[in-house]
Length: 167
Image 1 (cartoon, rainbow, N blue to C red):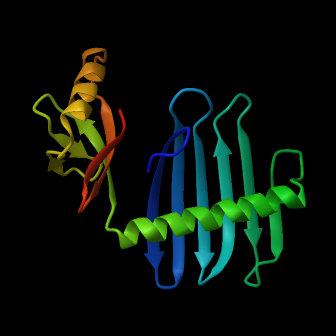
Image 2: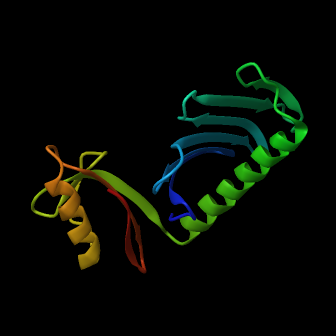
């Protein structure tokens, strides 16, 4: 989805009662790419892992037991404050709610390599012709002109239509 300062892509895997989410925030202009991994066992959050690709890079890994109590924290040399942990939990709940809403709305993330014939070979190896608006196709073509290799694209597909996220 399109966020305030960039694009957020979410991948989700459900296994029985367990939910595993991976999200990637890609800023439009300023800021660093951030990956976030979250795992729930039933309704209990069991893992938060964050990577901020800054200089120096930041890494946080927090594990919770089956009662939701803090079990383990790994963050460089600095222990995060309780307020930071609460903020990480809040963000985990937000991304889970967003994922649930996107799934309910049948919104699908697609991404792959753009070809000159306006088709895309997705990461799964499928060849598709995205139903994107003309301004989006023009934007991709402009970016392609400045690249020596096929550009990567990401877009959303839903019953209401498609939306370009990243080139």
